[in-house]
Each structure stands twice: as C-alpha cells, then as structure tokens.
Image (cartoon, rainbow, N blue to C red; front, side):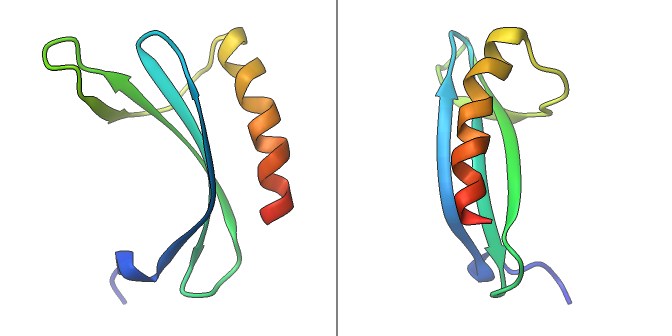
Length: 78
C-alpha cells in the first residue's frame, strides 16, 4: 500500500526558529494508527528567502536547548 498524505493527521506541531534555520517538532498519526514523533529541519535559501527541507543530522547546543521543551510538550500527544 502506497503512502497517502490524506491519511496523515498532524496532531501537534511547534517550531523553534533560528537565524537561517528552523526545527519543527511534530506528532503525526497515520491512518488512525499509533502517534509518532517527527523532528525536522528547514533552512533559509538566501537567494529567494524561501524555506527548504534539510536533513536534521546534528544540532548545536542552542538548537537542542530550544527543541527539548518542544519534545516534552509533544509527549502529551503520544
């Protein structure tokens, strides 16, 4: 069965913004299944000011300090 975006329900989402990036902490529930945590990064494109998805990879200390409270809040939705 292929992924169907219409079955993916966003239950929670908050974002920590930085100078040239932002990290989102979200909880999604696919097809009424078990809610799951998702952490993603977007980076600012300096050419046109748009945001584009980027691999999260590693975080700086200030990023981790901003994201930890968001993860704690997301636990209420899991």
